[in-house]
Image 1 (cartoon, helix red, strand yellow):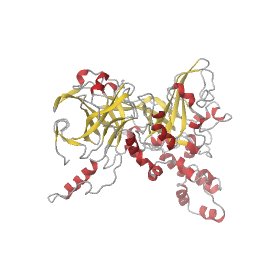
Image 2 (cartoon, helix red, strand yellow):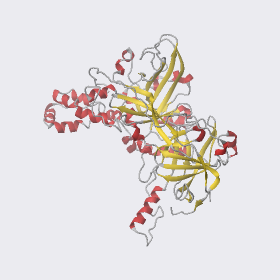
Image 3 (tube, helix red, strand yellow):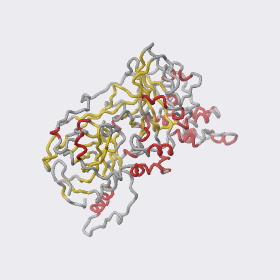
Image 4 (cartoon, helix red, strand yellow):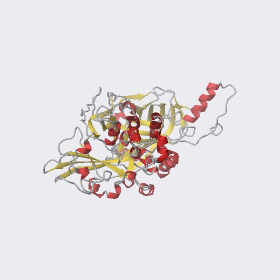
Length: 581
């Protein structure tokens, strides 16, 4: 038996117009925190590890590796297999894809059919128009005065806006005169708050941001999600005094003082004429961002992306790390991927083919942000010096520290727990000297199984409640669990496995913990991912996963002699700007 466990195997709209400009309200978002943020770098000591000290990279080579045949390309394909289903593609679509299936023709009403339609009660007309996309409604509005008033009304447009704003109720179109005007102001950008969670490829550590819409100011903002542990104490494990338990009480906050992206009503009219210059393309051009905290000479531009074809993405992802600089990595399940930028030297190598030139080419699941410091010469106005990567650069000046970060989102199915997949979600984990890191806990779907296939037979003495509980447990403790880093560290970067349990069922079952603080927890075999600085010579080592509950896990790094914790992050509590985060 592995470890001190009790053996018990039973357990645009292009045609939309925004109207006149309206006064926008600008308020700076201030961070509120009961716990001040500090660097997540914790000061640790070799005494905190009763086995091999993982902070000494020389010790990594003496750790025996485990088989990784199931952790390479075959697993990447298995993790992504459900993305090939037509039902998933239909569910994970947006208004952008829906409007192209209609060809953008809108409603074609003529003659007596039009007369019959407009003679319907107003409520029925509104109900019918509510099924149209934002890009079909302008065509309906152009047919006659009666349908115009229906097609531009807030009754139709408020639900359209609300569908893109999870977690907050949008009651007014402020600072615009109508919800139609509000939608037009942020056209091309509504997918950002709709999918809310975005993780980037910056260096090895990456970045996790939460994008939300603020109804109080009519702006779309994205803030970095940060975590710090409020408890850094250690204790010996009573079951094995050679093992140290790293206590973990994470505090998760948004960095409200420093927005990563920000779009206000009226921004597109104040870009210094960049968007109206000859040859401008509203989908290929960069979008300048006037961030509230922007320092002088510091600039940030937002870029829409064009998804790679599945053939091109698969060809590049077949390589080993860094996988042709495609984002996200093959470990992360995704149905759209984009070309990343390797370094500042490669920024200008992004060709026009990497950028969308029409709405149908825009990816709603990836985007880029370009940042730089502009020195020498006069400071550029907002909107100047924002030409496309590799093209027009506008203002005279030296760009230093230039970088392009590519961001991707996650299908909500991946992080939404179900009765049989209770550990799906966004989690934060303790990585000792590296601080807190965010993870995606992914539990791929299993094929349906009957009681006979699961080896379940009802006992004569078993009550209905006991039988149903055993049937439910057999379907919960089944299949694979993957912990994928959304943010990383210099050893194991973002977009890589941090640990994997191949089977939560009988094939991976070790026993039930009998010693505090883990009494009664199910323990299964897992594989932990370790590597040298720069993600060199990575390998998987034997470890054990403790299933403490639906919101808390523990990972026993056997060779390192320590146990670390992971907790679920409640993303929804950070979506409403009116709440203190």
